[in-house]
Length: 251
Image 1 (cartoon, rainbow, N blue to C red):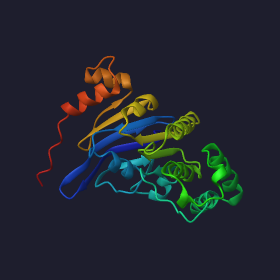
Image 2: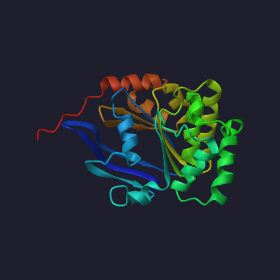
Image 3: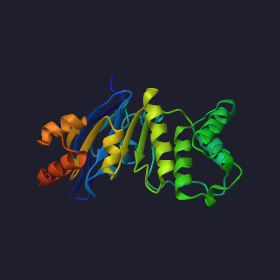
């Protein structure tokens, strides 16, 4: 059974198709990078997978459970970090993580050691007595990741997770995600930094005008795009310049 399955998932905003019949299967241990031009539908797709937007057609299954038919059960094993996470600035790091853990129904005996471990792993332990409102953007991004991981999800959804991070913080986040995948988790991330997708993602999907026009390993994308030996940038430019936006429905 695939960990994440999209079956012709479609979203319309008014008369426009934002996500157009996207089908995809991801297994345990996949790190999937979703790339595309601005406005192609990357963020809409990841919000749809997170259960924040309901498809107008098709379905999304997490561990075989339909987000449309049993949203609460399907969402439990997933975590979502938006590109600009909103945190509770008047809380300190441990207070915030205890709050998030309580929302997931975790017992304090489980949540407290996990929160402490996450803060230490993410380099935030020394800031545990400071209020989150005074954190830098990079620290807030790491705090959001800690909150996403507190309930031990198996599927991580991240929208531009390296935005605003310095080189040291970006490396730490990359290492954390790679460790998560090695331990059997699955990651879906969007990024406009093609080098990040090329270095991190085992599989890559290219979105254009709401359609998943191509997906696979970098070598598979090179072969399909006629860019043998080319970089992901070469593949991306070849695919997005050739892709034709889908026709809008007539009714």
